[in-house]
Length: 468
Image (spheres, rainbow, N blue to C red):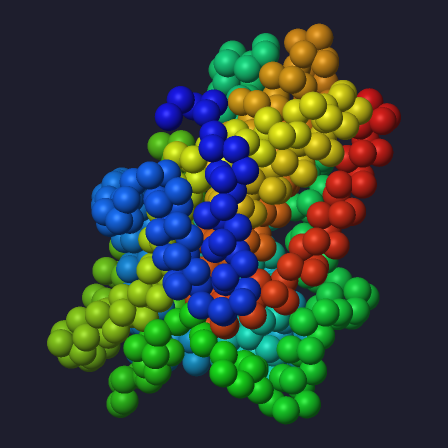
C-alpha cells in the first residue's frame, strides 16, 4: 500500500470496533483482539492474517523496548513492595498529617516531578501513592486520572524530554528549519501555545482542591469511595496482577526508606536525565534495569535470601502481564491502522475545510481524532507534523511565525488528548496499571475532563487563528 493510500471509511473500522467494544464489554483485551481480527479480514489477509500481524508487529525493536521496560518496572515495583519501601514512604507522608486533599496533591506534584518519562510517571505515582489514597478513600479512578494527567501532558511541555527531541526532529527540513537547534527553538517557542497540555495539568490541581467540582462518572466514583469506602466499584477488574498487589514485606528484615526507595528512584532519574544530556536520548529502559539490579543487591545485603529476591522479581514481571498483553494488541492495531491508511483518510476527509484562520484549530482536531483512533501520540506527531507544518509555513511566507508556533502546539496538544483518553493508549494503560484501577473505568471517568479541556483548547485555537 502506498503511503497516501487508504481504504476509505473502512480504514477507521478496526479502531471504531475496539473503542466501542471496550466500552460495551469492559474487556480491553477481547475488544482489541476482535478489532485486529476484523481488520485483517477487511484487508483480505484471511484467517492467517491475525497471527501474521502479531508476529510482524511484536517482533520489532520498539515493542521489545516497551516489553523490557515494563518487565523491569514491574521488578522494581515488586522490590519496593517486598522491602516495605512503599509502606515506609506512606508512613513518612502520614507523619506529616496530611488531609485527603493534600494526599492527592502529593500525587499531582510527584507526577510533575517525574517529567522525563511518560511511561515511568503514571506507574510511579500510582504505585507509590495507592496505599495512601486507599486509606483516605480516594477512588482508584481518581488516582489513575491524577497519574495520567501529569504524565504525557507534562512530558510534552518540557524541552529536555524524548517527546521534545522527537517532535523537534520531525521539524528538520520543513520550511526554513535546517538543523536541530532551529527545530528545538521552534518547539520551545511553541510551548506557551500548547493550551491542552497546560490546562490538563492545571485542571488536576483545580479538581483536587475543589475549585472545579467533580462531575460525570468521576463524581459517582468519588461518592462511592467516600460514602461506602470502596476505592473500586463492585465487579471491577484492576489492571494489575495479584502477583504484584499481594506482595508483602519480607519479615524480620529492617529496610530503609533512603536505600530501598530514594536510592533506586535517584538511579532512574540520574541515568535517564544523564543519558539524555550526554547522548541526546534518555535511556529509560536501561535506567530501570540498573535500578532493579541496585535494589536487588541492596536487598541481599540487608539479609533477604537470593531465592526470595528472584521469586519477587518473577512475581513483579507476572504482575505487569495484563498491561503487556493490552499493549501488544494495541501495537498490532496501530500497525493495522497504518496499513489501512486510517490517518490518511482522516486528513483527506478534512483538508477541504482548511484556511489560515482555522489551521491551528483544525490541526488540533485532526490530531486528536487520529490519536484517539490509534492510541498513539507519537504516531500522530509523525503523521501530522509533516502534513500541517509545511502548510503553516506556506501561510507564513516560509517564515517562522506565531501561526507556526500555534500549529505545532496544536499538533502536540491534539496528540496528547487522543493518547490521553483513548482505551488503546499505552500511557492510559500504564496509569490504570499504576493505580490498579479498572482500565475502562479509568477511561470513562477521565474522558469528561479531557473533553472539557479539549473544547476550551479548540475554542482558544479558533480565537488565536482569527487574531494571527
